[in-house]
Length: 356
Image (cartoon, rainbow, N blue to C red):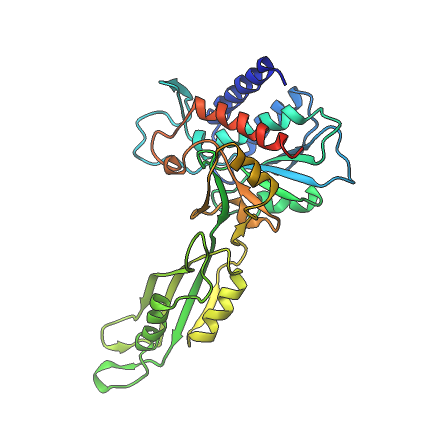
């Protein structure tokens, strides 16, 4: 592709991002931005598909006999926090920065992936198919986002998930599992040493969560991390509580599945353990995968991401990669550099070119 047309892709991407910023798209309320994305792709001659607030498309010469690469990012946002000094829905460019809610997380990634997809869209000679999917409900891990359309996308070989990584290669991501624990005792009067205090029954289990180290440690993340974050018991000062409930936040590494961690916990504690969900899985890609090697050849570095994204919903190798900086996500007066968008488009195209 010529430099002129690459420049057009960049200009179109920035224009699209400005329209997305100007259109509120809180999780579960992304109908209007889904319309913006759908119209943009159609205006550029690309046939789209839509389910609820998820929009996706395949390259023109899609071939069932070829493997498919998923290019995914999300278009929902969190709600702006009270520290904003700017209108979060007024896209403004100042000093090479584009300000606005969702500009960094993850609008820049979404529009850059669309630009890369457009670059290859008409090519008849690709070794892979491409599917670009800009999806909903990532910020609240909702069931009507990427997860809801995966059966409609067909077999996928691997994915690039667009999130702000400064275009460095996040080759693994921690999973997240939250469990609610219930220690049971027997109520009684505190003055007469009656009952079986559920708080005391909970203490050994809480101490186990604080001190236990899982045997397998990740090269990227180290140990599985478990933190007791909520606790509650008792109704009044003179009644021995019959029940003590506490919650544990668990960050799972690429060395375990969520189910393996849950089984290990249940083998060691006496309390009842109920996971809220096991669907946010740890994810990774082989450091020697061709797309990772393509990034390394372009001077990128690899790391393990501590944050959770839609990678957690994928059962295929996936690489988290995108323009912007995770430190700016959910911050007041969110912004992304225009140069970051340009670099994102160029690097996505170069990396994919090496394998397509």
